[in-house]
Amino acid sequence: MSSFSSHYRDWLKVADTALPQNIFGYLTQASLAPFRADPFTIVPYDDPKEIAKCGKIGEKSFLPGKLPEREGPRPDMITFMAPNRQVSQLTGDDMHQLLLAAVAEIAAKHSVHVVVRTSVLEKAGEALLIADHIATPHSIAAKTKREIAHVHAGAGSGEYSMHMCLSPVDCKEVITKKWGERMTLAGSFVPHEYLIIYTPRTKEEVEVVKSIVNAAVLFMTGDPEDTK
Image (tube, rainbow, N blue to C red; front, side, top):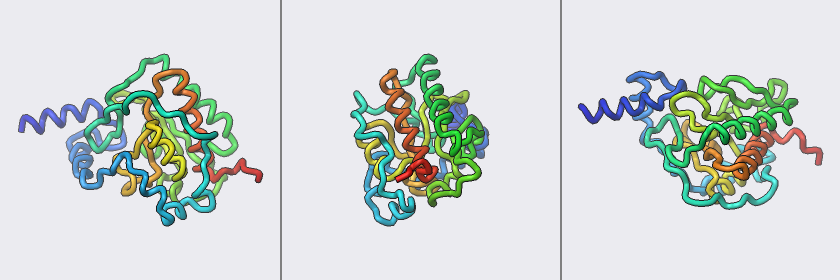
């Protein structure tokens, strides 16, 4: 019983508003353990059926080119099913502010196609969502309730990683180059394309993450700026 109590108290320290911050929320996340996704597999992104879910842009990359490989090992991740966060390689306020500024710049750049609202998935904090006048372009966007990306900037588990959806080919690139991994529930309660992107540690890494966020916006909005 003492082990359970200790585990529950540890969860409360990082619990966020996506689940009730009480014993019911704790038990809910624990019950999801059978659905835990392989964080590093890229197999789903070569599946024709999965690619087809993304519509006519299912085989397209929205990154500016090949990503550099992220230096060093991946960060350690929290052991709970939810929230999905990293617990090592954490950064300070200077990097946090640079990341928020980069995301704000992306939102402004795509203001015709993107709105900033409270996250419908985290139920707190700001997120980028597809603008109301744009039709949901594919089933991936429908499953995330049109949410594109959000930064984990809140109290408790706010370590400035991000959740976002990318095209299948970009998921492969991000995972392979160690910029992120699949969310704990990818492929079940959220799409296979739903990744966690690690918090950037340097100014150079902020720029890489910024390019990943931009790719997420283009994919999730159906690439409305493509004039080709």
